[in-house]
Length: 304
Ligand code: CDT
Image (cartoon, rainbow, N blue to C red; front, side):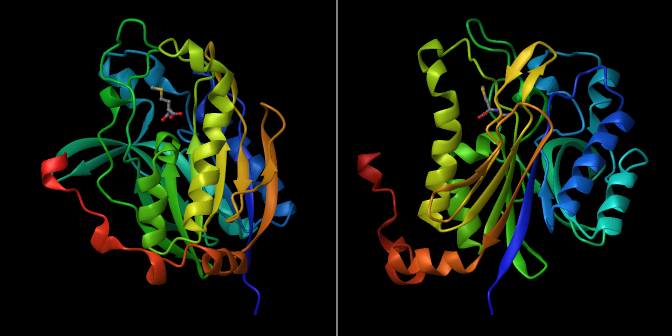
């Protein structure tokens, strides 16, 4: 019997600092309703979808920092989104800033939760590749994720969603081959990604014309080399004075872009992901069990 899952990528336009959480949650619910009406069985939202991308600022005031974080998910402000998922029978993956209490200590992660068609948590991923710095650096676009987030500690888990194996990744993770390889070694058939990517980086003006190419290149390569569907949602447009690229997309295990956003607005793209295409592509080149040679994938001590 054919296997498929209809995916909606919910790109958002900016979430300005001045936006109230309730207003932002309303926007996400409106996108989820559109996704369900279009037949989607799952939706993916951007990284830090509930707030502006606050790591663009050096903030010292703890109360101001904590206002960007969610101490519980769902919380009083976000419960409505989870209720909408259950009402619409359309789950979602949502990026947000997580404030966790572990063994009496406060920990902060850049997190994405997978929520099921019943509105309940299916699984959690915490961003592993945390880019930028903890202090502003001269000549460099201010990107202080390492000030606010510690690297994820959950590895690259894969969860069963309506019988489909789904993994998640967050923004900079999408540039690293290890992300897709680990997720796919763990059995992922679909990788859901959210991102906030500055259009321009002060440190690399010579690469400015390649920003969209370097957005899609690793995701297409990751999809192809690991025979997996990739669906990625951008936060796009000018957010609190900083331009973020769009280019949200759904990529097939062939490496082809099956659907791509055409605007920098709240925009939905939907595609029915044919999961049988995975085994077709796998047979051609990437049958891991048959052809991978993990015994040869080792560092040679005197050469490093
Ligand atoms: N959010 C995020 O991870 N953005 C990074 C830009 C880092 S610039 C220091 C990205 O890879 O798009």
